[in-house]
Amino acid sequence: MSYLPLAPPGTTPLRVLAIAGSDSGGGAGMQADVRTCALLGVHALCAVTAVTVQNSVGVRGFHKVPGNVIAAQIEVVCHDIGLQAAKTGMLASAEIIETVADSWRTHGPDAPLVVDPVCASMHGDPLLDSGGLETLRAELFPLATLVTPNLHEVRLLVDIEVVDSDSQRDAARALHALGPQWALVKGGHLQGSVTSTDLLFDGTDFHEFESPRVDTVHDHGAGDTLAAATACALAHGYAVPDAVAFAKGWVTECLRASYPLGHGHGPVSPLFRLGT
Image (tube, rainbow, N blue to C red; front, side):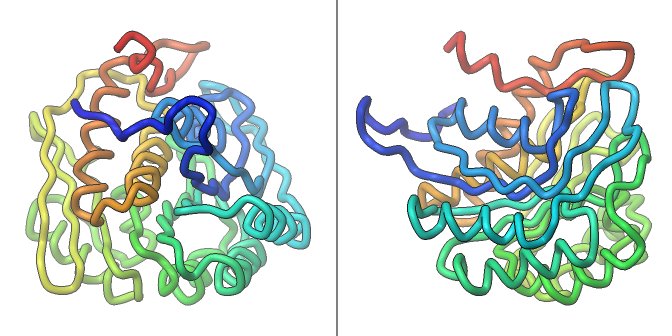
């Protein structure tokens, strides 16, 4: 695959702000965001929203970072360093979502924002409290350039069970109606196909992105990686369909390079880039 252009040595690379939770197992969350940014030649700025206690088997708990600390993290990097794009991951509560939305209205409205609406871990452990879904819909989705839910998150957000291409289109329409500029319905968890098809919708046109389904159980952090890679491409000025196409290819290669870790699901890995 082709990669994003690298900044010449000694020059400042483009910056992407990751607003997300920390994964103590290093497979997903902020750690996955920073890995992808680094291996795509982008400098990652970080606003940590929660500290999770997790490994390859599951999430044992998490601690939410106070809202004023999250807002301060966003403010200081925006004022001093600046950014070309941002992405969100685990936001944990309605209060944190409101904080992030307020901070973005103040500091980031001119940059593209990718919202990965993390509701639960891949093991089914909840990562967002009960009031958070409505706040996501009402406060953050209208600010988003792109939202990137998986099929479980689609069901929670718009109450549509995606089982085929028709219901995937219905879900994309329903998500777009919540206010983002673009909605991406990922098809990685759709059963019964040898390919994985993601569907992008801007309120008028549909764009399909298809890749071979990679046969691996080590897919921890795939959603974070896709959203981070999309944000990196948007930082480079890619149009949204081109950014999604790039990120789809990137996460497919990361799935092919995934590795076992611990006793559960290992992470997708961008480390393959080091050999190219």
